[in-house]
Image 1 (tube, rainbow, N blue to C red):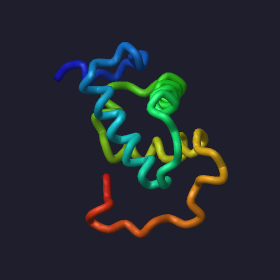
Image 2: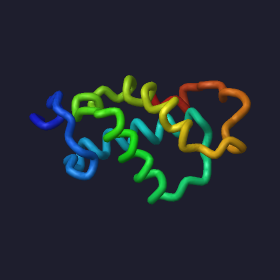
Image 3: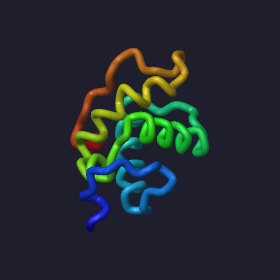
Length: 99
């Protein structure tokens, strides 16, 4: 797929569906690492758009799934309410591992 191998920034709302899904999947795994919090779908989408455009990610970044999850972890933590961040990191097992 030509668009995924592109190294040029494309605004979030102009991304093809495949790239947006890969990005959403990486963000969901990063969200799982942080622990779930009560973000609505609209708030989560707005946070993802803000991060994508602010960090100038490219479609090639979204295609590198493990790297994207690790890069999103500290960025998504800024959008979480302080009282809902976990005090400890959950033990990773083969069943709850995303990346």
